[in-house]
Structures are given as C-alpha cells and as structure tokens.
Length: 147
Ligand code: RTP
Ligand code: MG
Image 1: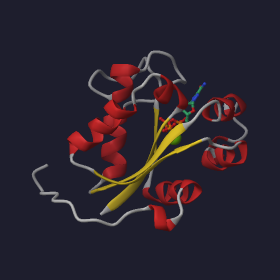
Image 2 (image 1 turned 90 degrees about the vertical axis):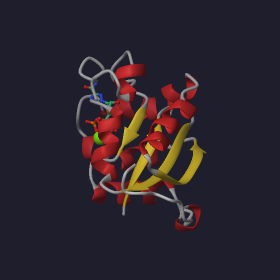
Image 3 (image 1 turned 60 degrees about the horizontal axis):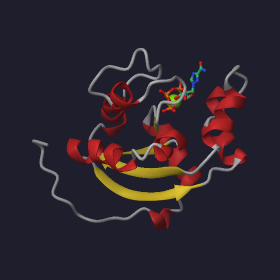
C-alpha cells in the first residue's frame, strides 16, 4: 500500500473546493488517513518546494503557498502517487484535461488548487514536513480490488 501527500492550496481553500476535491479521491476509492488545516510557514514552504529552489518562480511560489491556510492530507492506495496525479491533472491549466481537478476547476496558472507528491520518496519527505506520526491514523476500510 502506497502513501501520498495531497494539499488543497490556498486558492482551493478560498474558493470553497475542499469538499469537492476530497470527494474526487474518495470516489476513486482511496483512503484518507490524515488531514488538517495548516498555515504554512516560509521555512516549511521552502522545504516542501526545495526541488524548485533557484527557479524564477520560487519566491512567488513560496508567497502563494503561505498566503492563506492549506488543507494538508495523507492518503493511501495502490499506486496512489501516479493515480492521484492523474486525478489532479497537468500543472499548467491550459494543459489540464477536463475531468481532472485542475482541468475542471483551475483557470489561472500557477493557481492550480492542489498539490500531489511526484514520487513515493517525495511523498514520505512531504508527509514528514507536515505531519507527526501520531496524526496519521491506522484504521481498516473495505477496499476491494474492483474499486
Ligand atoms: P505541485 O508540486 O504543486 O503538485 O505541482 P506540479 O507537481 O504539477 O508542478 P511542479 O512542477 O512541481 O510545480 C510546483 C508548483 O509551482 C507552480 N509553478 N509555477 N510560473 C511557473 O512557471 C510555475 N511553474 C510551476 C505551480 O503552482 C505548480 O503547481
Ligand atoms: Mg510538484
């Protein structure tokens, strides 16, 4: 079972899309194991987006992600990193296909509503940047192979 870190960004919170975004992943059959509101600090944002340090958009990305609360989550599921990024859609809103979260709801790059980890190792690093181990809840949920 794989884990990923998903985060409704400040634009998604402000637009009242937390519930609909969570529903996309519940509908897919994934399992929510942690979730909370976070006012991201600049230090935490820089750790989260460390791979983009030095790029021209880095400072504005840190400003954006710290501009208001985010809703941070940990989800579980088979191949969830790749599958959740498919549910999320492409980074640029002009490339995000209809049916994806970004394709259906995002209209201006870089305000693309949700973050999803890009690999299992990134996921573990990002989870540790936002959650204490005790905040991640273990519980059983019937997940059958056909959903
Ligand atoms: P994320 O990390 O937020 O899930 O998004 P992603 O993998 O689809 O895209 P990534 O390349 O990791 O970029 C991180 C976020 O930075 C903003 N961005 N701005 N102005 C630009 O050219 C630019 N490029 C990226 C976006 O908010 C993107 O989601
Ligand atoms: Mg990324």
